[in-house]
Structures are given as structure tokens and as C-alpha cells.
Image (tube, helix red, strand yellow):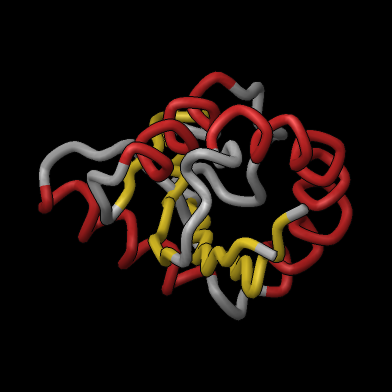
Length: 125
């Protein structure tokens, strides 16, 4: 079993240009303390993601890949619909998790241009 030391929320994209990632991070910061975003996290996103966590880690952080690592993912929305997922790492675990996040049918965001950042600090048991 693995220990997820921290999964912090903010915004998300797929690894593309650094400019796109920077824009997503800016939008994530914009909504970090927003009351509607906090409500969305608690009522929509958390219940949406929690049941998917085991499958995500089984697929992307298998025993052969388990090691201490940290990276961020940013999920970005455009016009109220999922747009993309970006990452700040080219590590295969980060790439896999970004790809899996991109496959999800995300709940409607609290704002049309919303973004959410996930900081992952992973360590094997």
C-alpha cells in the first residue's frame, strides 16, 4: 500500500506549453480561496475523485514505479467544460496520471474559466 503524503487542490491541465501551464496555475490561484470553488470541491469534486483514487494509483503508480516523488497536475476548464490537464513533470507517473485525469468526465465547474491544482507528494510504504 502507498502513502499519499499530500494531495492539495488548485487547478489542472495536460503537459503542453509552459505558457499554458502558467496560465492554468494563475487561474487556480485566482480561485484558491473562492467560496463557490470551496463548495464545488467539497460537494462535487471530492465525491467524484475519491472512488477513482485506487484505480488511478493501481494504473499509474504500480509497485515497480513506486518511489518518493512530487509533482503537480492542473485541471483546466474553458467555457464551463473540461478543457485539459497539464503537469509540471515528464516522469511517467505524472504523465500517466495526467492522461487518466484527461479521460474523466469532470463535474461542471463553479466558474466557466475554472482550474484546479493537485499537488502530489508520493512515497511508498
